Amino acid sequence: MTRFFQENKTEVFEIDCDGNEFEMFESMRVYIERHGRPYNYLSSVRSLNKKREQALAEEEQKQREDGKISASLASASTEKEREILEKLAEGRLTSIKDHIEALGKSKNIHMRRFLMKCIIPVLTEGMIDVCRVGPTDPVDYLSDYIWKKSNDQRTKNKRPVQ
Image (tube, rainbow, N blue to C red):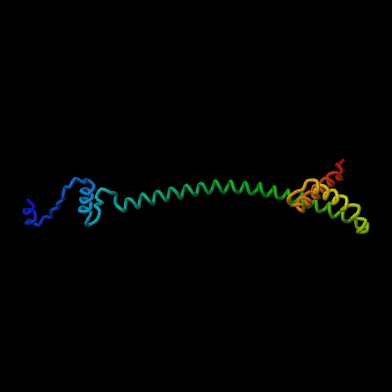
């Protein structure tokens, strides 16, 4: 039978059946795909490209919509942050003005008397507190202590508006 097909110039594919199904199917696959894979059951390249373009367009539209939403949220949050920063800056400016006024009042006192009256008591209390607490970073602790004391004194010195 093989001779008949060979004489009529028809290719014959022969498989040795030794019981290994995987080898048989793999041999048939290789034979069938020897000139390339058969793509007659797949979608055409043109239709695949159209589907891909549609998917990309939908994704791009979704990103635009998400971008608009995130941009509006970002602008709202930046406005809130700006307001908070402006309030913080105003508070710092008033603190600086108060400090400048205190310095202006202290110009009349000599430096030694000023230090003995204003700085040394707070510094001594802070150093005692550093010894009592024993922090890992004593300089940072002392600076925080002095900062808190100066803020406490400022709040005590402010008089309520009548």
